[in-house]
Each structure stands twice: as C-alpha cells, then as structure tokens.
Length: 413
Image (cartoon, rainbow, N blue to C red; front, side):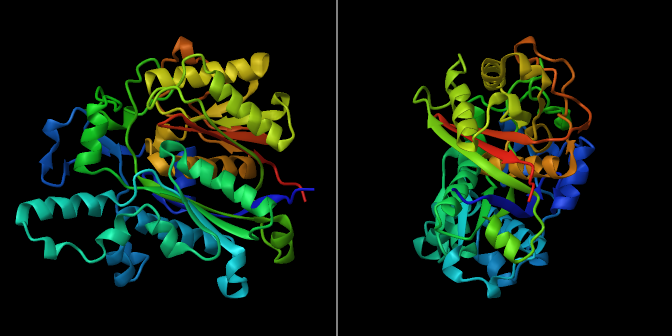
C-alpha cells in the first residue's frame, strides 16, 4: 500500500503578504496585491502596454538572510529561502534531527535568476568590461540556484513554465510514496518583473493593458472584462512528509496529498486546446491517482489566469468532467489576488488550497463582477465560502502544453 503523504508546514512571500498569516488574512479579505509599476530599472513605463503587476513590497532580504546569503542569490532565490525557512519553522522540523539524505528539496521555477541576468548583461554591453561581470553570475542565474541553496538529500528543479511548482509538489508526492525520502521541501518561486521579461510578455499581448489606471482591478479571472493576465512575483513553500514520519515526530498536519497528474497536449506553445479535453483528462487522471471519482470533489483552486481563452477552456473542461455537479463545486482563483506568479503559481495556489481544507474557508475571487457566459460556474464567489472540504483539486497549466493537477484531501488520522 502506498505511503500516505501529508503537509505539515507552509511558507509564503507574496504581493499580499510576507508570511502565511499575513497572506491568508489578505486573501480572505479579497485584497488585491496588484499595483502600478513606477519604472523598470532605466525604462519608463510609458513604453509598455501593460503597466501593472503583483509586486512584493517591503521585502528587505537582510531582515531574513545574512548579508552574504542575500548578495549571492537572485531575488527569486531570496524569496525561496525566506519561504522555506518559514515552512520549516511552521512544521517544527529540526534538520539536525533528520538523516540528511532522507530530506529532499524540489523547486519549481519558470524563469530563474532574471534580475541578475538582465542587470549583468546590460552592464556588460554598456561598459564593455567582461572582467567586471559578477563572479557568481553563472551559479546565480541557473534555474537550480534556489534548490541548490536550500537542499539536502534529493535535489531537483522543475521548470515547466506556469505549472512548474505544481509538478514539483506532484513529484514530491511520488518521491515519498516510492520511499526515496521521508520529507521533501517543496518551493515554487519566480521574480521576473524585469525590463526584458515584461517586454516579452507585452509583445506576446498576454498581459492586461486596460486597467493601467486601476491596477487592483486588472486581474479578473472568469469576468467578462478580463483582457489578459497580470504578472506577479513571489514564492511559497510546503513541507511534505510521509504520515509515518510526521506521526513519529508528533507533527501538526494541515492536509493530505492524495493524487497527481501530468500531461502534455502537444497542441500550442501558448494557448490551450479550445475543446478543453486535455485539461479534462488531466483532472480525470489526477482523480484516478487519488482513487476517487468526480462526485467526491468539493473545491477547485483553478489555474484561472484571467486570459480570454484560458479561463473559458478551463471552465469547459470542468463542466465536461463534473457535468451536473460542476455548479455545486466551490471554485476560486488565487491569481485574482496576486497576479500570475509564473513558476510560483502552483505552490501559492497549493498553500491557499491547503488552508482552505484546514480552515473550511475558501478565499474570494477578486473582481468577479460581470460573469462571462463562457465561464459561468455557480461556485465562483466574490465572498468567503464556508465549506467542509473532503477533496480539492489544484490546476496548473503552463506554456508548451504542460498540464498538472494535484489532489488534496482532508486529513483524518
């Protein structure tokens, strides 16, 4: 019989709060963390179609990390360290008492060290002085820089665009179930609100541009007036361990990880297949992995990026799989509050899902004012929903048709 896998610690760095407590208080209040971008380095915002983002404000790395740590790692890795430290403390997990090779780290990241990467290449071209490139440039910009500074035991970085950290969570589940580790520190992180990355998403015409004068209204999943996603940044961490290990150390358990699915529809690099069949299949495989049927799901934390096509396709997939029950399932969109945090999105959504199961409260979907007929589901609300949740789904879909569904369960010893 496969080992039961539980979540025992949470950590968060987000546009609506640094620390899980602050994040959850803001989430339940439905507070948007999307604000205007004053500038992007040397670049004024007048040249950008979109001028808003979910930014982490008041983040001073020296408050959480030593000066040496802070200077040697990119912003996304700083976020990772802070979130991981909080999660370890929350789980009351003492690493000195653990066998090093039985504790793994799996990080999901979409872009990696873009802050340092763009800064250094700009300075190189401006100064023409190659010898002045930062000595830590290479190890800092690599995608595994965050997992490398957190890691013990199995150490992996997963990069599947926007589904990266959902896949990281699923891989942690499998790692523990197959006996490769007792504990896995799962982190999702990205900090890519940089001149080049932001320009790239603007050129792709993927970002919201109609709410530059009302930033807090820009991220509006499922709403008729949505016009693209809002970039965000941040990190979230979850301590995942076998129930046997958690029980032995008398750990507090938030929820159980019950299933996981990963698919690729090989359809398009950016947009999902419009019939929603592959997303439906992903959720169906996730439910099979958990050993449950569609009639047992009470809540879905949707991918819901606030794009015209994406939200409609996900809705279609939900209706296809759950049929008449689709309107009875509580559904929300964490991205309505923090924007789309790219590789961190799955982990941030996972923390919101875990807390919803643990507390019985499902945070509102912000800016859901004029429901789109193509996205209408009765379970989407602008207010907190009080629910007893047995099973919940987290959806995450990334560029390149990388789809992930993670299944969570109410923990019963």
